[in-house]
Length: 320
Ligand code: NAD
Ligand code: UDP
Image 1 (cartoon, rainbow, N blue to C red):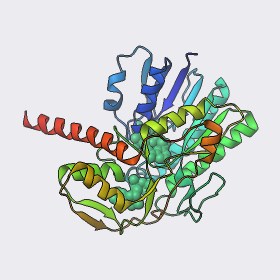
Image 2: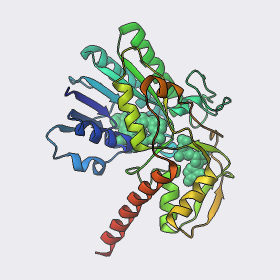
Image 3: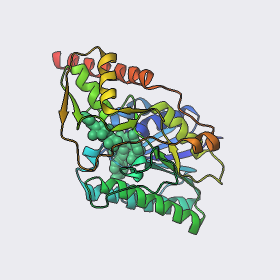
């Protein structure tokens, strides 16, 4: 059945893929974004589609519309960007959640929250199941993001329990792929762009910290499956790829796949940088029949192809 869907943060990395996928499935999509970290380029190819609508709006302000479903993705995701204006980041998560939940309550829409593995902080339990409460420094530089997202989860559960709002909480683990912003500062885009430009690859600390990287297509499939799951499923549900790599292993893989002659250099490890991160995905497998299908090498190849094309077109533009 054709649905009207609101996607906040729809001009960002994940949001733009979600807009595209939901349009392809025959839905009407309204993309809301303030362009803080997203861009019109990400959704340029959708603008001609009569079922697509783009609205510049900030989720910290109330918004009125009639839709069947809301995907709440608005929030900068890269540490550099979310730490740029921490108060704005926490307002985006908390006031954004309040505004979107209020809207969902009024119009009886189903609403999904893009939460994060960061709610586990620097985890003392490894790998991380959904019932782990996390280890977050509430005063550290990452707190505006981690605590904002934790508070948003609480708000979602409270609106569900108190007002019967149909909610879905998705805990997203590091996801990468085409349309990540080149200057976003996240590790996969940084390493690929550095390798393609022949610049030093910046490993923070000794690169012994781990992450588990999920390709964007797998993430979006999981997100839609969660939204379309039965009312009894509220989440939280971890969506990520359980294959864990050290940051140094990732750097070496990127060098190998790009054929780059870049050197690996160590830079100071940011404060409170989590040492390890790996999802337990049993819940997604059992309740959503979801599991990731794209391995790191295949996903990196696709992402490298995207950045290679982007860098080539930029250098062509400079030459003309
Ligand atoms: P992104 O930065 O590319 O996208 C975020 C989008 O939200 C951008 O288009 C930005 O302009 C918009 N935005 C930010 N503040 C806003 C505001 N106040 N009002 C309206 N729009 C606003 O990041 P992404 O990787 O696409 O992440 C999307 C969501 O998924 C975020 O909520 C993020 O926390 C969550 N998430 C992502 C990852 C990941 O690895 N990509 C991991 C965990 C959680
Ligand atoms: N990182 C790195 N070099 C970079 C960017 C990031 O070594 O150029 C490290 C960072 O310190 C962290 C990991 O890569 O340990 C993942 O960082 P990212 O910002 O992508 O995501 P998050 O820390 O939120 O998982």
